[in-house]
Length: 199
View (cartoon, rainbow, N blue to C red):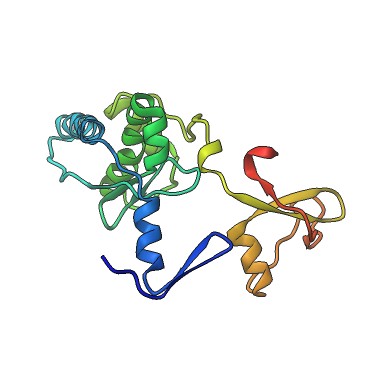
């Protein structure tokens, strides 16, 4: 493959072909055996739901593209589950046992009850009574490998850390954030950034 118009400035790749190359370099490969384990768990939980409701449910699409510290998300209308490939690789069986049923429960609740509170009584019932797993809203996986930089902000009463996304919204003038405790507008403290896991 011939690469044309690619420039490296201070170790950063840019140019015509840079984004596809960067995407390929950052793509996490999930071993087939691990993908099969995800599908076994998914199919077992779908079987339990089918038995309970006397109704077959289509297999949701599984996508390994969730980023950040979220282990997974359920895309209700698309009938899709997105899983974090890094957290899956790092936590394998615990991830599969906790996250796959958690996200499937969101889909099943949406199909049976429509839009309800994300981790409300319907979801807890679906997890515990139908899928037969403990209902936990959050995961306890180590997230240091997937955390990003934060930016320090100050209000009248304390220091806050904003994510890159929120910080950029402030810089573009699209958002302003206020402290929940004192109500003061948050002000950026220039010259300091942190890794989330440093806090």
